Image 1: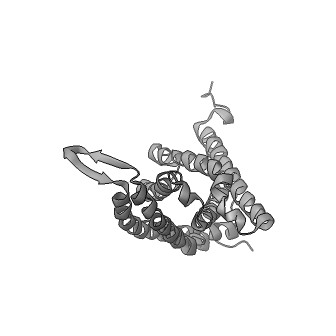
Image 2: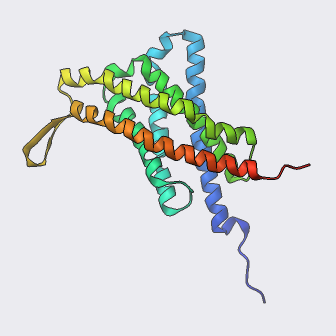
Image 3: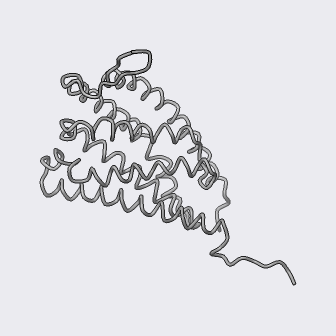
Length: 232
């Protein structure tokens, strides 16, 4: 008798693809809901909707960003092909801004920049997760591939600027209320506003490394597509 062959649904590669497809689908649905909700509210209430954007979609946004931390595990154990450090930088940018700045300071939640930042984040993620979800099941569209590898070029720097402006607007509130003061070892006292000022520098340095990585990845992906022979 020949060696037994596992059913398709028991094969590790199949289970990995099913898991990734479900993960990307959940993220796509979450970010699609956020962007649709924001668009509908803007057309219904105009600029007034921008003030309470966080109250309307903040919970779903926090859930989606929390789940996205799984991507570091995906890369580490090898079920997702990507570079760990650039992805870590991208995720930490959002975690610091969303949880450390926006969620912790109610005054910032009403700023227009929060609405703008959420639009940028969700535009990028909707395209990225759509592309990743279809890629897992072997579906590829040249237009979608090009969009996923190009949309970030103008939007990612705008995201970083919006994140920096969010931090800048939050500093007076953290300083005036003396919020988030902590004690470090060796009796060194530090306050969160000073940490945020230092983080502004880290933010722009991280943007350089992330942008360089994404640009190299774009050349590789689009280069493969260009090299494929066209069907006659």
